[in-house]
Amino acid sequence: MSDDFLKKMNQQADHQIGHAKSPFNQKSEGSHPVQIRDSIYREIKKRAFFSDQKMIDVVDAMLEYAINSKHFK
Image (cartoon, rainbow, N blue to C red):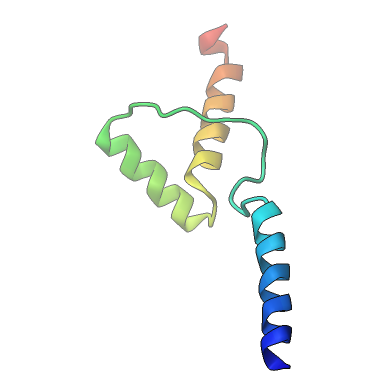
């Protein structure tokens, strides 16, 4: 009897896991690797850590700010 229960639970878990989205994929927008200098990388990593954000979010905010500045118009 317990084998039937475990088999049913296993099938249900396989079904749920097989159709679940990754918890890390929150947005449907893709991303691309970019090359930056090591000193800038360390600074971004430090700022992301202290603000408890993902590095991609910090870089995105920095790039948005730079793109909207008068320097790139």
